[in-house]
Image (cartoon, rainbow, N blue to C red; front, side, top):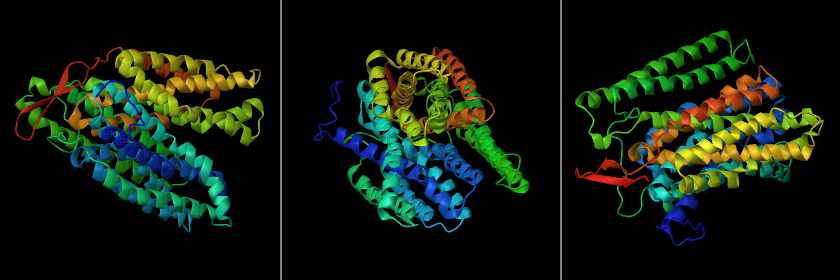
Length: 488
């Protein structure tokens, strides 16, 4: 396969797989964020308070952090074809449950469960990585991520009109139910059209389940430490629902959740130790070794890129409205440009990685987004509005191209564990979103942008410790022979 990728070459099975994959991801994002553009209808139907609406938004992302880790393990173990098909089917029933809700408690439960649907992104990363060689994997993953991620924006544009088209008090229910029907039908289409690997290729699976296999004791301790921020983020989400914040959980329920998180942390730590203890004691062959620092740096890079995107998309309409005294509709339209950049920027970041090198591209893009957020921190009411929008769009390009550059490298770390690496990296993106939104709750918008810029500068320094993928990684075939996979 040449370095050039023609997305209209439908006779090519790899191109067909790419389209089948991004559409599946697109549908999961439509489902995951289906409630957001319909909150006005839902708020009126259930007479919700502003605190209850905020709680729904928090619950929608809470489960995504652990579920991306779990789904990453499942996809490595069972393959993308069956896992994505089952996730789409599950998404349909969760969607229908939300559409049929008769109480706030039911709304909250199904919104919490919907966070699981947000893990669909991880599955396609492994699938696309199987079908494209190293010289094309960046742009292929960028198209998958950028076009699929647009599902949230597409839902925001279509679902309110669909609800009005159905009409009546239950129009929003029918609109959300349609999202479920789409996911249900596509689960069968995906299963029929997708294959885990090209014909004749081997789908490599981890030797053990329950956690990433690392290749040195130093990396094992590093891995255990990298799990801590994810539990801190979940504890922060619990705190946001506690009596000291939104007050939607009792003190007893809050303390029980803290206890559950502590128990889960202990269980996961022991499982990771169990997975790695035996093979580390036996010694790891040189051809099987990889550096966990590669995973950790990609995690923090996605924390800064996707994490800041999640946070900024949430606050930008209100920021424009307050800064320039605009109507909610106008501010929303101006702010939507940030998400629209996904269509071109994320594939662009992947393409640059394929052409310029992974480390150099990621360095340039993270440096660019640091400067971009520093510029946004200077916006005030005296700015010319078109100039503010241009500054926002430029910053958005670096953010989303940076996301593309991160996942241009994820499939090149260790083939048989790509799902788990993608899951952990994706989870860190959500951890970043929680962190930055928590910061925003304590500071003004200008300081918020400056905090992101400062954290991006730190991340830029971390990226300098990345090793550029070169040569081959090795995987053991079922017959015991060694397969070399080109990652240059």
